[in-house]
Length: 76
Image (cartoon, rainbow, N blue to C red; front, side, top):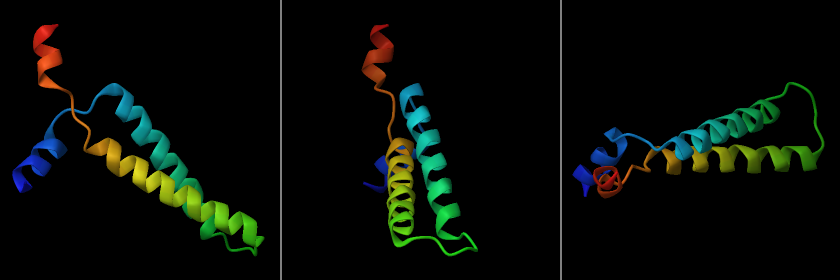
């Protein structure tokens, strides 16, 4: 199982998941910036920022371990 995870992390990522990873990192950065803002923000904004940060981190993590299917590449 450990080999499979390492293989997934080192294999090439499809273009679609690269875009998802970038969007996730952006959402995570926006959420983190709002959470660490030096000014007092309403509770609703803080809650949304927490959700943005969490969604961004999860999207980035999942898209990082996505890999291209070798059978599709061989058929093309």
